[in-house]
Length: 158
Image (cartoon, rainbow, N blue to C red; front, side, top):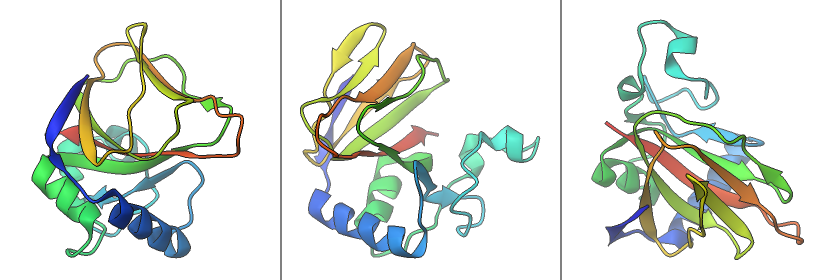
């Protein structure tokens, strides 16, 4: 896991996510980049949507140009960016993807963890992106005793 050098305004991003969730309600994922800048909810792998689509095709922000989320996506060079939410007591399966992803923790607590190849990390909501090689086995979990969501913005490097 590699910490990136560029810092983003987490308070502004939290406010933007709250604003988005009013117009685009979601439970676990919200797509914030798409092929045409309008598709918020088709979060399936691109080839499952249409056989000739790939991650790189999901490069147009669904968010306004003045959003900090948009700046994060553009300046980081990421595509198919989603907001991912894990409720307390939830985790993902231990799995492999492909490529490298950038995680920006927006809401977290010291009981939320990212595991990559059996190494446990906590990604802080400090405004910095953290690069993860998802070719390795990995998972994320929210082990909080409190009803706190773990919210990350995750994009794939082109």
